[in-house]
Image (cartoon, rainbow, N blue to C red; front, top):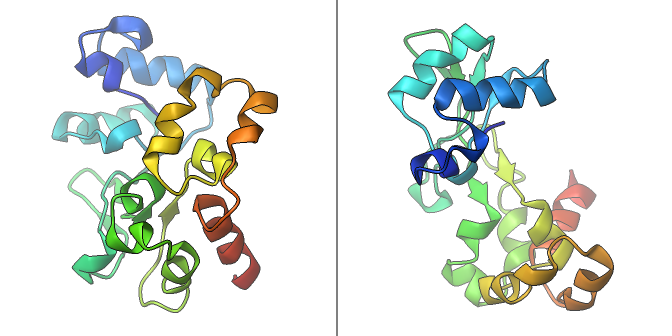
Length: 170
């Protein structure tokens, strides 16, 4: 729901402070109840502001699969429910299974795991079937040109095929 990266960099293009960023985003999605920040940006101040805006859920807590922690929602001091996630495609691209091309096998391991499994797929990585972040970086100039970008889609096992595998077995 929000992108605070510009604010953290001192660029007020999305708002001069956290409240203004949230106000602007709620103008676009007025019925939003959940907050998820780009780059998993969060803070006590942000969590404390959420009820003021009617935001009841947050999902910025990443539990890497190798932690073996069970993903379970929990309520914090102000009533907000935090929902951890256990897979993020861009972080997975740094891992040994990704380097070995084991995308589909890796996501299959989440299907029967205990606890809830919230998985984060970025649309750009699904579109490109990103298997390595260098593909993503090399194509930045055409990210907003889908007809051109499609020519750079990876044909092997990558982010898109992993998401398709999950959708087929769920």
